[in-house]
Length: 361
Image 1 (cartoon, one colour):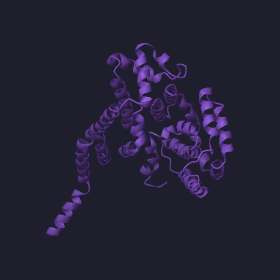
Image 2 (tube, one colour):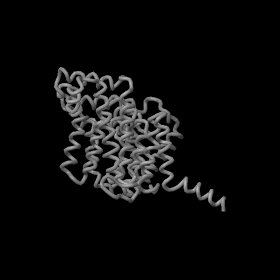
Image 3 (cartoon, helix red, strand yellow):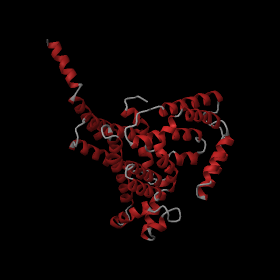
Image 4 (cartoon, one colour):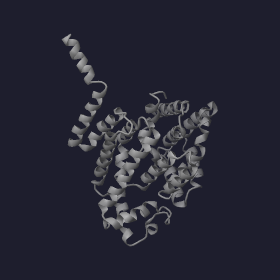
């Protein structure tokens, strides 16, 4: 009887409500030692604590937001971040439109930054802190909740576990901010005026977001991807293109025609070297196996029939297309970098269907 009592106590401690207490305790213990490590256990606690409108969940999410923001704001000002900080300091002498790139076209970041400059007296720290705070607030309180209302904390956990989510945020890249705005636009897929207004803001933040226009125009045609004919041509094209420099170069040349000359010339220069430099998968056998695995994953994604809401349609449309483009363009650094940037900071979204549909890909 005593043994059963002990076993029941152990089972009670390791299940149900006590699970949450364990992760909450571990999370705070780690947070006091290393705040960045602590946020993972804290996010898992939020996932386990499924109470709607829970104040403790909200407080923990805000703690996660502040933790990442302070961490990012404390990095050394180098590389791209140094360039953005230098441009920010020009706001004391020039208008946001003069500071903006693309002939004043990409002005949103600097227009929003201008009040920060005025109120903070041109503080560098205020600039970095503000944008990191905006990125994290929108990610953890808006985007993940819209895409996964029930399991948003688990989705957030996968997103923040992607090294580039924090790593790229530390450089305060405009395209990172533009991607955040793009995901907000996806929340309003059923409200076209809001969708296109917010999407336009993302383009005015970074012109590279024009690459995602076909996604918004075609995501409702997701059934096209389920066609056996489509799958057949995807596989054949993928197997052919990955081993053919000329096909990839012709494809890039076609895409470059629709881009501004500074971007198109760089893409063509980068593409010209495709297949002429040794890469990790230089051995024919290894490359073929790698290729086969990638395209089998694409087919599995295409065959997933479950779509619950418009955001899932977009993700289902994105996955196979982006995976194919990222794979075939892996040697075309700038092109693949810009096109696939949507999943650099948000690589955790690749786990969306696994999270929502219990591994039923």
